[in-house]
Image 1 (spheres, helix red, strand yellow):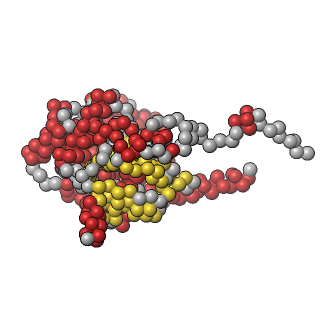
Image 2 (cartoon, each protein chain N blue to C red):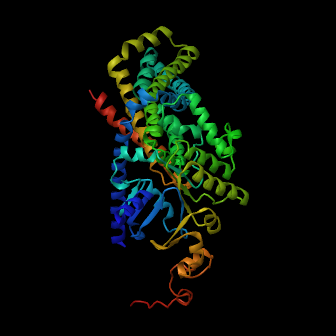
Image 3 (tube, each protein chain N blue to C red):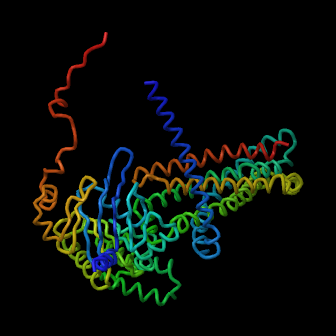
Amino acid sequence: MLRQQVQGLGRWFINTVQRLGRGNLFFLRVIRGFPALIFRQPGLLISQLHIVGVLSLLIIVVSSVNVGMVLGLQMYNTLVDFGAESSLGPAVGLSLVRELGPVMAALLFAGRAGSALTAEIGLMKATEQLDGMEMMAVDPVRRIVAPRLLAGIISLPLLAAIFSAVGIFGAYFVGVGMLGGDAGAFWSQMQAKIDWHDDIINGIIKSVVFGIVVTWIAVFEGYDAVPTAEGVSRATTRAVVNGSLAILALDFLLTAIMFNG
Amino acid sequence: MTSLTTQQGEKDRLVEIRKLVFGYAERKIFSGFDIDIRRGQVTAIMGPSGTGKTTLLRMIGGQLAPQSGQVIVDGLDVVKLSRKELYKLRRRIGMLFQNGALFTGLNVYDNVAFPLREHTQLPETMIRDIVLIKLEAVGLRGGHALMPNELSGGMARRVALARAIALDPMVIMYDEPFTGLDPITVGVVMQLIRKLNDALGLTSIIISHDVQEICAISDYLYLLSNGRVVGQGTPAEMQANESPAVYQFMHGQPDGPVPFHYPAPALVDDLLPKPTVAKC
């Protein structure tokens, strides 16, 4: 009994390490296809930027408006007790630019675009479309995976920036427009307290890292899926769960590195 | 004279498979056999389900590597080719997958144009002409604007066939081309395979277990079973072959060298399990 459990644990460990290795080799193979993609077939990238990025805009904008409005409401009510409602702008701005923008946009992206990428690539594998491409001497990693990964890496930072910007307007609408805060203080304090490098650039770096990791996990799970209906369904679930966990873990790590001083 | 004949024979063979061994951890699929595919012929590789027929096609196309043995296509050892060389060879190989494997996001026209756009620098007007000619050959020029989800199984396979011949390959491999088709469509696909082979001077390899259809269009047959070639010959020779394995397959006998029952302990042992003795 104990022996079986130890064997099972060992098997799980070996499988996990093998998958990690396969995932890394896959990533290197994909990024080797980027130059040819950009210079020879930019149309593929543009079409994926539309599917992965533009079509994710709606959920990003709707979520960010709501997050911004809730932040504005909660923070205004707390700050007003201390007579510090002029700090609403920087409080909301910092929360969004440093944390909520990159993290929430990445989580939404994993759920909306990541799951779609995994399911699409997994189904192409299950219906032998990837094999068919291989037999036509067209590398599916270059033709199918590379445009999707690069589109994810480009789209997520832009979506995160839009999330932060729209969220700030949501907070402004509630804190200034509805609750009567001072508009000048809101914007000027925000401008004074938010640093270009420490806050905005670091937020962008975070979202680039999240973009790479979330899209990489999504395309790898699809490409590595067991080519059956159940296999694709499991891969899609794994892509969202592992992508989201990776975002949260990396967020802590990056925050500790960037903002500990 | 003998060496001239041998050389002629070697030139005549497009695909040579030598001492092929392949298997997964606990299951041996091929235990060393030889197969020759001659140029210009329609050669069928038959065998019961699970004998590794599709695996064999994947090895000829270089998608899988054997554990030992050689797969030589047009004089090139597929196993030893670099990725670039393999892709160069694949441009001369067409493959028809069991369900067509059409790209679901592209319409019929774009599916057939796909290999042309990827591998040639031809202007779009010329690509259009080639695509329409290929679609005409399979009788689907009128359906060039349809999406794959609007096609029946037979139509999808015909489109896939048009795509497979788009680059004028030297050989086409068919993976179970008749599975799941109605009798009329089977007749259409049979006719297409034979006519395209003869008209375009192709070589065709068909993987199938549909004996009647295969016998009607093939020049030579191989029968695989238990990882070996258990019979080979022309359709007439195979029909007349009395060896038990060949006879069972060619005549659809339910029991024989390929047993009806999956290996299991005696039925009585399963129905009447021995009582377990309680340990003190």
